[in-house]
Image (cartoon, rainbow, N blue to C red; front, side, top):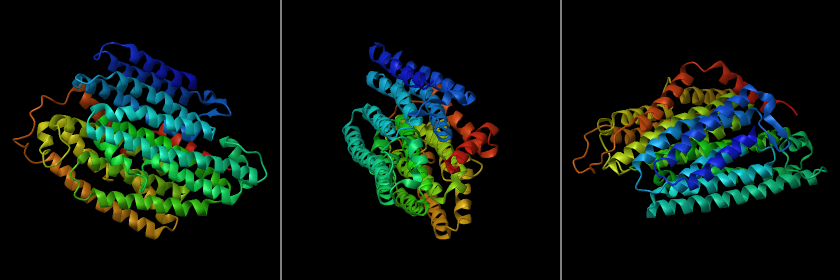
Length: 477
């Protein structure tokens, strides 16, 4: 089944390259989204199909990440079809081909049980998403694209070195060198501690760069700020989820090797530092799309904090992957609509969005409340659960800083969002014909429904998947 999930999107991407019509070509994106989502559901109901060979296995953690991104892609795919109808002045051949191919390549990230294959597939997601950032073809967008590629390349190079160190730790420990994830888990107790610790640091920096953890986050404000809103949604919910999956792999190996205390301190420190940096740069932020980039830095930090707390917080951590992805999807898409209507991202020019675009303006405001941990939305549940588990594990200082940073971020983000949403539409604003349409507004509503349902009553099927992932991460091999 993995072959269909990878090959079909890539084949449709090739079709996109030869379809001549700028109007027809974007519809390949929702076609791809529907097919991929249906295949993902089929896999979840047929777990016996989740094993191909020792290199390709969809384990419980991979299922969570794959389902999360498949839902994100499905909803965004219909938005993409509507968005590109407004951008017919731009040739969309490369954009559509890369957007379609992304979900196929990302699928390989979730299935990879060989750390070398995972490294290749994560790097491929970087290369396939870079042209999406350049879609506006401005000076700022080309600069953002190169920064994304350059910073990401440094990170992925360090991740490759860390992968080699991990394999070498097996040799020094007296076993065969291997990049096979299951083999490393099974022989975790024999891995050389020094080489394993060095590998963990390099892999955390490398894949942490892909996640956008501070201080490796420097590509995010430019990439998210200059890319179309839909690309920001895919980067913040898709590419980062793949990198987080890679970090959970090395974390699990270190746990089996008895290095839990070592990894926890580092993860807690970098998670809190990411929240600190986000809170600082969120204050008095005039560019509302860059504001969302720093919000993403914050939530990557929250995920890492959850991982650092240990197995007791894994349920909340995996749930936060889903909750934050869906909420950021709503925020990035609504911000893209507002940006399109005003032809500006600056709060000096963008005010009164709730009057100019009633649906997008309202959902941008609701998205802000949700992402900052306001009940009854899903992020409130996951963030509160992580906080409770941190206190229960004795992380009193870290838990207190967690609350402080979230409070500062709420205030800083609130100032920017309220400027955008309320007030009068400036008289000198560019008079564009852009309005909320069915395809550019309904996906936002879909995200809102999901984060409300997940926040009020989590479906039993999702609870089962999350518990499976927690059990898999905590059980001995």
